[in-house]
Amino acid sequence: MEILEYGSKDARIVLLQPVDAHDPELIGQETAWIRKRAAEAFRLVAFRVDDWDHDLSPWRAPAVFGKQDFGDGAAETLQEILGYCEDRTKTYYIGGYSLAGLFALWAAYQTDRFRGAAAASPSVWFPGFTDYMKERRIGCGHVYLSLGDREEKARNPLMAAVGDRIRTAEALLREQGTDCILEWNEGNHFRDAALRTAKAFLWTMGRQE
Image (cartoon, rainbow, N blue to C red; front, side, top):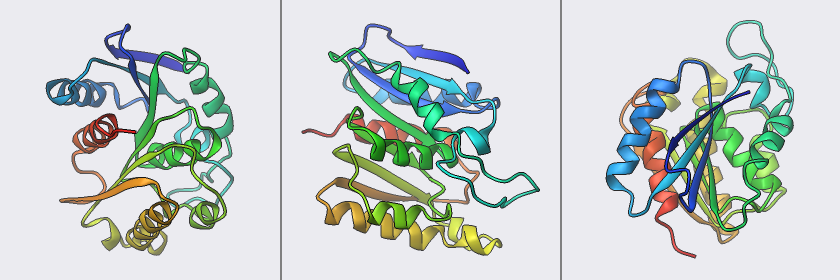
């Protein structure tokens, strides 16, 4: 897994984000947007995954696009990311966009190492994920959720359920006392990914204990 680093290596705040091969330019834009608005220096560590649908999926599920099913590689990916979270003087946030946003949410249920989860347009339509949330408590105190206002108008019935699923996710987190926000953005799933992810991280960075 290739590791890309941005920002200040000595920063107390560390942002952790899985990305795919097409994301480096977007990560640069995202980092610049956060830097202009953040009250404190930060380091962003981007983990470029080799197989998006396998490396970020918590369990196996049927394909939505094409013929490739979703795998179950999230646990292995998380273990690699946790290897960058060993300095207890640092504050860590996990985040991502789309399936990486779902991964960030799932990861925050596996450990209390993250102070917040920044899930921008997360794939909460993923089969079984709502039930998974109902049965567990998240390990971080702050969760940012967002969705484009046209995402629930998708033609695919599974993906069109994303609006109802993310509203349910927000309600479940709030019921458990988690500091949570759900923000709606203009456009479909493919609009302003860098900006949406930057906003997600900035919100979690600004929360107080």
